Amino acid sequence: MIKFLPWVLGRHEKCAKIGRTWREFHAFIFSAYSTEEKSVNIVPYTPKTNRLMRTAVLISGGGRSLKNLLNRIADRRLTGVEISLVISSSLQAGGLRFAAEAAIPAKSIIRKNFADDNAYSESIFAEIRQAEIDFVVFAGFLRRLLIPVDFEGRVINIHPALMPAFCGQGFYGHHVHEAVLAYGAKVSGCTVHFVDNQYDHGPVILQRTVPVFAEDTPDQLADRVFEAELEALPETIQRIADGRVRLKGRITYVE
Image 1 (cartoon, one colour):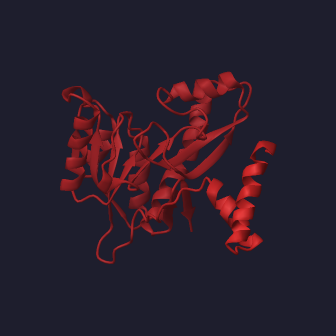
Image 2: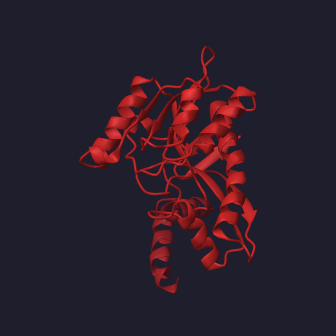
Image 3: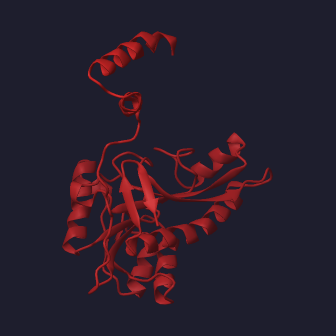
């Protein structure tokens, strides 16, 4: 701190010469070193009076989160939302059955059929645009997608740990819970966050915690975290559908 004193004093003298008050100088210093991102507010979704929020759900496996959302929509615990498209990264994903039962259009788009992540992402978002989707939910989707500009702030994911801990490339499923237990963490949980072009990196919207017990197995911890996920994901979607979420830089404001 001492080494910056001459710089600060020099700035103070300069401010005095041009007639700035100490309060103006104080504001100048803090604005120069502020870590807050200078960005405009983003509202992910504005409710429409004539239709529901058309939502695409992306899956890779059994589809338990998809089924939870469908059940909540059916019994009106989740309102203003319709699931209009399901996209799977696997032909064998069990969640495709839930889409078929609900008569929801579904597509399986396989990564190995594309040269790179960019081509794979473009194919998926082409389907999403064609279906006139308002919002995208990753519900156990295990492939990396690059988010196009027109969908920035309109894609969310749920991660089975408390970001920024135990997240990033390779941290999915039981790999997460094994790492939590190996570290000796006393709490874990889930994080709903916006998706950007890095693994588990986008701004956090909502988190729920669960206890971790010394005798836990990865399966036991996974079950406890999933119970939290069953509440956290639809709660977040409801707030977005109601227009109660806005984003500025990395900070999410939820009404």
